[in-house]
Length: 594
Image 1: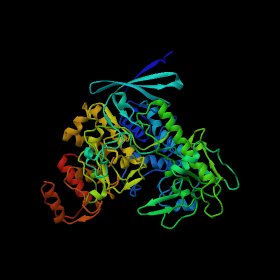
Image 2: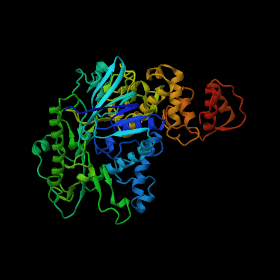
Image 3: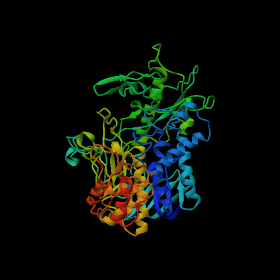
Image 4: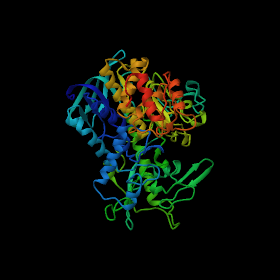
């Protein structure tokens, strides 16, 4: 007997409750629109909750700039989750920025449930106000469109024995694999493009390969119980996975192979294996508050390279996911039984205890695989390697995009595609162009995750936590802006006045659009400095990321800047760059840029 179908209408449907989906839903709801959010897992939050990667992949500027105000609210809500429950240690109180796990690869490490609690706390006021409805354990099974217009999306919610058919003005695809694209019959990119297609020097020279995607992983969490034996049963395929993966603590850095130790630091390496993505560090809390450290294992050893789940048939996908779980459990078994002990006395740490409660699963692995690569829209603009990669550019910033709707920074990190080792390359601080959020063949569908207009290569720097959040928040804000202005997203890109109005709305809610490392959202000149840079009136310096808002300008220098902006110049008193930027923005655009 078919499940009954319930009809639901809203302004904006967000399909997928990962970080991008949550950011999109939260921003659109705060702007006053009726939003529905669906998520196939029990937990919303994606990368940092159901996928287990609750050690945020961020950049060196993150504590002061380089993310949206809403993302900073999320980060501080996580910190408050711990501060409100346990007194901190003197070490943690003395640190400039509290990191519950004190992991060396991430500036904020925490348990997945802490991320879930933070997101729920941020979304709940919108639910209570009637602007947001959340549907967990629900995944898309069908969609309809008429030409370039999406008409409906249907999701299944078996636990509630029903289907839900949503009719909305805008549909945001925040699924981890871009699931709406094939359902709607829309073209998309998948896997590695060829050099002829993209002009990227590191793209494939021998033609595209849709099946060549970045790895996915099932992370897990462990603690350490001295004197106890928590060795798990040997997983199927253990020997093959151990030798073929292989399981190792030795990684290549440039031309050198360096080997980590489990608990001890090693010269020329940033820390131990244990502290790499540690989620909770006992010494961050007052004595007796936390019994032991908790470490999350997301390592080259459990990056699954055995197949591509995008477009795989259900039976094939299930097999790939099963093998990926066996790979992760095999890594744990190797750590418990075969890894060389730091003191050189034997092998294995049976004291490592798998913590299923941390991931909220029976098997101890994340609820959903950590997905590094999605289907990608065929967009009005595609960001390519030559736009962002440091070795291909000059100056302090990546390719300037006048249609910027956000910023990000992370190395171009390509994980273990079959036949290759993990490849990475530094990028310059980059922008998220609006054109990358606009599908060529749909006028009311927007990507809100890592399914935007990027290539296989640049996906490697646009898929990280704060950037996915920015993409989702920009998509939610764009849908709201279009509803309020009665225009389609393509018109916002094509009309300079509409684009400026939308960018001003983003600046008003704390979404930075241009890279400055000393012009945070709280500064009075934040919006003005950003807007003037986008307009090309005050572009950033070629050799640094500073705006220098508090630097005092003499009258002669200030008048020169006014003339460059096409304004009359008759100042006689010194003025700070920040105050002058506010004056220029106000005079040029007819309204205050505060």
